[in-house]
Image 1: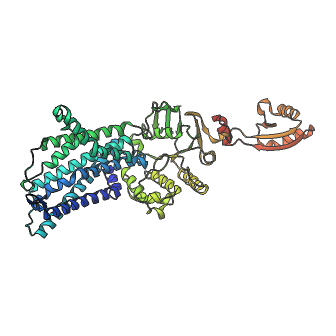
Image 2: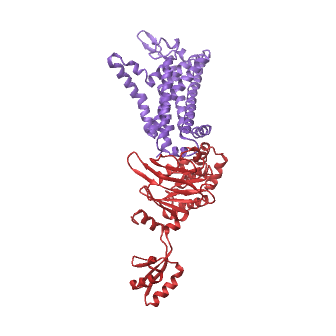
Image 3: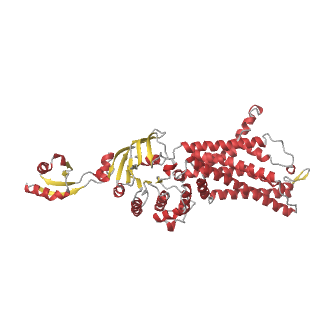
Length: 276
Length: 302
């Protein structure tokens, strides 16, 4: 397994897709901070007086964990799906799957090493998100003359863990589709369509049936749980929030189940199918 | 006593889901240390057979033992180097970096990468991205990757595919060099000249069936002499009396005589003494191409 991890890391460390993905995550985080900062400083003129859409207090370092959650989903999840589909699907297009499967390790060992390295990349993307978020919040606080105080370590750890889980599970959707379809383009297309359209439409339709009688079904959908998990990170600075329909604990369990399930299904396909 | 065969299959069969019978009960045997040519027209089942031998495809029925293990067994794979169809590498990595990835995967020391690059004469161009390589360079890199494990068995699937004549000649020389010593090379090809030049033994596959398996010499048949003479019937009678009916056959208006070419002087004397005019007298040897078309039932030049 160590040999496989070394090989997988060697081939992916310079892979343009991952480097671009990290850049996109960093860019989006900066954009979100910049836009929110602008909106916080330029309140909308309303009949009742000026009203800030965004509170400046949410942009300071002590709130940055809660703030970056918004940047992580759905765009960060979409990036993870694209990377997963590319990581698994392009092996078929390049013919490298046969090169790797005819070396020493067995197929499942190769798959295990690939998953490990993909998990590392999702952690790198998560750390990029948090690192850029933290830096952006420090910039805002410095310009606004606000004290620079970090969030509690436990909140930071929970935030990193949650975003890593969301990225990894969405990445696993891309990975499984890449293995299933045996190419990257269709896999990432289907994955993105699912996350950005199919699940949203399905949830709306199901929630309309019999006045929401089947709402509990939608509570098992992957990105309903991802959204619930990101929204569980909030504070008084963000204003009053409605109580979430899905608890953070439930979301973590459902997401973990999706991740494990997708990885096992893909492993089964890899092990049993011919490489033609 | 050490087993003398390194590849052995019994009734190896592959039927794809679409119902296509790609490989049909192949019994194949490759001996240690030989260069074995796996010959067949396009679509005959060569690549499917080789994919089964390295564990990429599971057979529908039958068994195979490769390097002492079942196909795809990690212990067997450790002793096999292969290049199946086109070389598969990462286009954004250099040739050298691609080999390093394969070396890591195969648990081979990194210093071996430079050794195999030297063998395939790609050292000076190993720093370029694989995506920019020519077909010949890609094939060489594929062979280099197959050599990384210093394998007992090297399986090369149409390694000269897509190469220009010079590239083909260079690849043939490379394969000959690689096949020296104790290493076994199993080479598939539809290029008869290539197989004839490189291989010790050949197996001919057509429509998924292994038609024959023998040394190149056995396949080409016995040596003989071709005689054109007038009148031909009288010439045949004389030669039949001397060499026996079994040694004589007629083809395209000539007599094919199974005998050593050194007997040509004696044959000429016998015929001319009897007043028969000899217009052509020369040694003949069937080409592998001739044998191949005869065996596969395909028409030459079709």
